[in-house]
Length: 172
Image 1 (cartoon, rainbow, N blue to C red):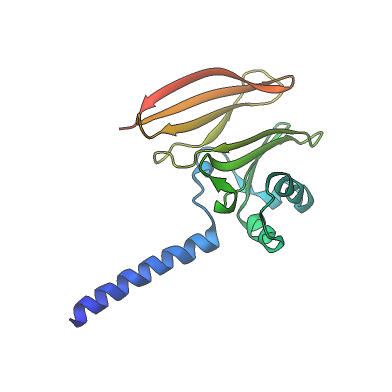
Image 2 (tube, rainbow, N blue to C red):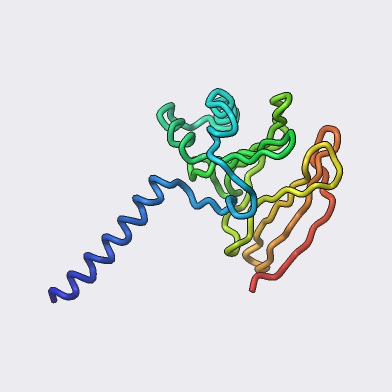
């Protein structure tokens, strides 16, 4: 009986530790695979981040800003800055919020909810150079019914992201 209580106690402690880890380290950073993501504050100002959060969320409490500031990640290449908010507070059925903007003008050019539940090692988003003024984006999505991962490449042309190609692979 004492052995069963000890085992249950150990399991309870492990589950509690997992919840504490998720609380302090944020939502699983699947996007962090592939790109050189940095803490957002190392890439953009708190003011800019605040404007992005305000533009995309009507339901956050003022005290939640610091939590998002601590968990958000950013990636910068050329004139493109991508922000992965990396928090369940900005996720829903469609995925988690990613925003992209031009460093030079501050113009927001991407706002999308992307699937973060991908097979291990599969990045949510990557960049590739195809000769355009901004890097192209390679975005992955999962169809759990068909058990496939769709990899789509989008390139920014003048005023919008244009789909250049799509590949599907079966999840093993």
